[in-house]
Length: 244
Length: 318
Ligand SMILES: Nc1ncnc2c1ncn2[C@@H]1O[C@H](COP(=O)(O)OP(=O)(O)OP(=O)(O)O)[C@@H](O)[C@H]1O
Ligand SMILES: [Mg+2]
Image 1 (cartoon, protein in one colour):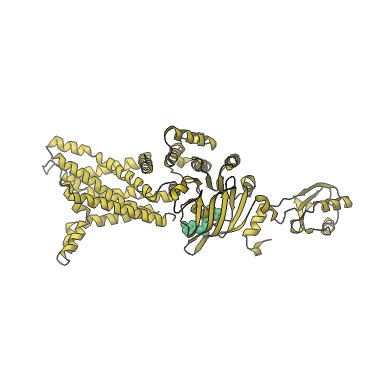
Image 2 (cartoon, protein in one colour; image 1 turned 90 degrees about the vertical axis):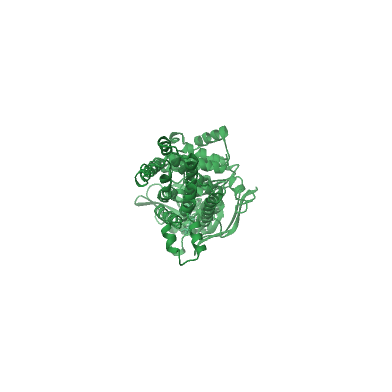
């Protein structure tokens, strides 16, 4: 186990050592269920799939992931442990990746705990489980995108409330840029390529394809490069102002 | 003596604040260097640069020949560091925290467990080993910080106020521990306790406003004191008449200060001119005058006096 692994392990057990894990998972499951059954008309649609469930994930993540991510670096700063971490023989990159992976993996655990949803549709009908699997993969990788944004914002400020608000706003920008309403607003008076550019940056555009069962290589690359970009930015910001 | 830590022209500015200004020194194996200085002098900032947490504005730090900026991992492997305030992951217990720090240092399995248990014993953490760090008292937190710093038996130890918040027994034990480790290590510690410098340091450095003001053994520092080689005279029974006037005429005497026992004067401190030895002259004089002397002793000099005179602006000296 390398140093990334050691950091990963510490962080992940850290979630479960505090009430964070329980609170996050319970709220995540409750909201996911509520959205799906009440707002998504899961039963009355009369279709055996999890589309209504996945449709709400961007909105769930938009609020819940910043709540998880805000403490990533802000907490290290507040407690002064950042000084311990960066005087250990570990590179900035290893620390950033280790902490990110643990947080991402934790959202993965919360997501996996929604499996009763999958069991339910399989009891009620005969869904295409391949599509559902694609939905889960897409949702997980999108969660990584939100988490990477949150990681970067949390590196900027010691104040967790500010970190939370900024992450939500930045995340909202990435979600909304693919929203029909926003695209309509731009259509007609801006060139087509600009419209495509905006929507190509959207979590929704990429996620919708995947959640319908179309795993396009480009969508995956989009999310992964987004994660890479934000983690890179995290490392730069930490290098620049880790002592403040 | 080969130098393990080499610091050249180290400087750090925060905006317009110059926190550390052109600091140059080396520390060799077996040395315990004490940083002294008023609050905000730049002691912690210097340590943060040596350990690679802060990037210097200019200057270089080498640890065992590794440059902290160009070979940070090699340099950091040789260093054990107790940051100011002894930060630790508060949701962990001392046991899990030390295991984590050990793993980060590359230890695994039995070797790791053995190291952690040994260190826990050294700093007396057994009683709180499974209690969450968050709920530990200040002194125990400090010991946890100390434990992680010495866990990997580093050749360089940087300790920022290691005994701050410890009870007298623990202070004594930590000092003994530092002394015991000193032989095969180079140690830099900062402190506000002057007696600590006398107790553990082989060398002391006074820093003020980011600059090194003096650098020498504790004895050399004491020699800078106004009270170096001053003679203390205490009398039995009633004070003889005109003692100060008589003493003033003894050669080498610079000033006479009254010593109080409660309200009453029961003796004098005879300050010598330029720190020369005046003991024989004074005792000669006392014998000639047939004074009934209870005590005659020579002061080595007081560090806090040196500290004050070196770090305070001249006009506020009394
Ligand atoms: N991150 C920072 N940003 C701005 N100024 C800083 C920062 N860190 C330290 N300083 C300033 O640098 C100077 C030196 O601080 P430092 O913490 O090194 O002092 P110190 O000698 O350790 O003091 P103390 O005895 O109180 O621990 C102070 O004026 C402090 O305000
Ligand atoms: Mg300090």
